[in-house]
Length: 271
Image 1 (cartoon, rainbow, N blue to C red):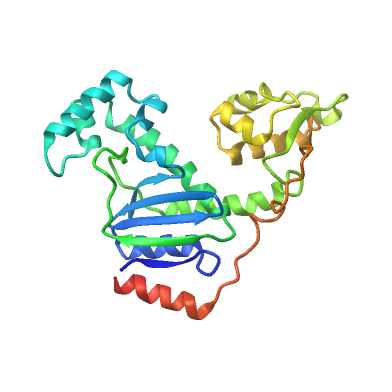
Image 2: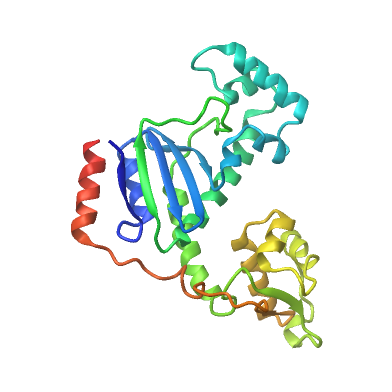
């Protein structure tokens, strides 16, 4: 029987902590308005996280630059011939199509960014299906990872979002250069990621669009643009259409219903 609830009543960090400490194996399904996410765990460790269905498909390895189309085709054929229990990740490593550390590092970065955004959801339905596993051809990490660091970074980002949102209310906002930069703009030195964002500022693209074009997370783009704002280099403005329900949503603390939380904790421990 699946465990269901709402992260408004039971925080995501608390749930992840219990899955980790309980060495649970299964799939955590999350939905919030039009958004969805799916996290797979093996004995409490995370092996895959996706924010869209295509991230659970082997083509993700091509989009991330880990394999080319021909290599993916070879790996798929070997997977089909490998029999029950064989996984695409195992095939890729056995055939030495890519080094294990590179595969792990790239998929971990993608997984982290997928998870961090979930901590900003003020509410959302969750369903934990015990013993559910990814499809054999899913792009899973070779080494499952602990969620402890993900929890700490996710919580840190919520705190930092609270400060950023004072100046940047939504990722739908447009960034533009100001006509006369202030004194703070003199002598500013930019890191490589900051240059990537700087080069995409055109007064038309939103923060979300800049994130997509630079392959950076929305959090990182907002953090960088917040620095530009503080330095007096840019300004942000709303799109012509109103954007409702965004300000303060990330930093809002969920109201915890103790009785429900206790029931969920007991259910997880008893699974």
